[in-house]
Image 1 (cartoon, each protein chain N blue to C red):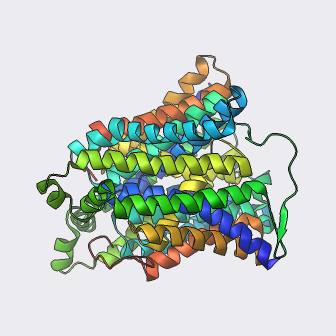
Image 2 (tube, each protein chain N blue to C red):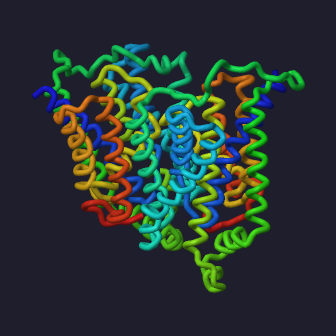
Image 3 (cartoon, rainbow over the protein chains, first blue to last red):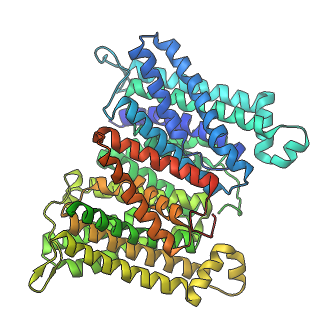
Length: 291
Length: 288
């Protein structure tokens, strides 16, 4: 039982880590809570649904198209809503509330198009899983683990080793200093939204093979993503990954003793504990200005 | 006619909610995105007291509002430690927790099945059942709320709230106990939200968690921001406009599976446009 719950936690955690990572990359460059990140995740899932189920395109190809679509979608949100706000120097809170507006708008747009019913990318019968160390793991779950670990590696490489990543880190550390040394912040923000939103889209597509697609799925995803980011240390990339796995595992081990309905409550209680006792997160640095 | 009066009752309840949130967000400048949770606490407390112990809704309303204040105090503690978007997210999280409790604590709240048959308010020899009578009751509560909040914000106490909003460090440096004021604001705001929740429960006579979803808090915030941050008239305008306007969609003869998401989309779009064009709201003075 313990092993199974631990495994479920790791799988849930890898999805949370992907969302938290995308959120964190964006947060690093723009310094506000991009709540609508959750709805990018939903849009990615629905895009894959339209391609695979409605148009009958090969699932691997539609996976890539859906990720690209999510990236463009995130960039579009930035250009249409956040750019005008940046120009008027709005405080972070105004961005957050506008982000809620985007979230509500897109979620209901998807509901209008696809209806409120539950859809799924799974076709055919549910396959029997493999037994590993007393736990059962399905092919899809293996795929989720492999893809997310691979993406976590790629992202680490982009941020740490490429010029683009260096620019992102520079803008994150000091936007004015970065622009003085010739880094065009708007372009870096564009990269960040592209990369971050693609990660959200990937998470959305992966989860819709494992569970279901519904218009409201984004809320839970972004809440967990933000909690994971806060646990790990806001704006800290390894922190977001640690936070994601930590949250997934604790949540799933929690329902060993408590009813499954309380999962969300567990994660919010963790959030409140962290915010009150260690608001800078596990890996974050103390920053008095924000708290 | 009955229907029109019904809309006015709902608008009145939202005006109380909006005024109480405006005290926290608009006048004191503390972002609070979990306001509906206080209404949830008030509604469930007075309904359960009436259903399980036969306590009069009048007393239930007061007890419900007091329990909501305790919830407000807890949220207030978060407001001491956190600022800006962190506080906003934490208050939203507390809204999620209260929603989850109302949904999962089935032994107490009956979970998603909801609480049916909640008794209404009664005066000696007269039960406040007809919609017109309930409208009068709601108007009385709106007037009480407006009077008290108006007195608060125009008193020396209210000036300190505004000074916290404008510059917390400055008010701290002239010796104002900022922590105390923040806590009081959350307690008072939650108290009136609790009243609004209880008025709603005894009017509809049925409550379930779906009336108190976390996104509903964003709706109340939209009403505050739309009407005007830090403006009492604005709260009337925001709540009334956003309750009455979507009802017009109904007369256009749209099926509800279409009208409900469309209405939410309009709300979302409105929130975006307001943030870009006029973050202080139509007749508000204060921006975030």
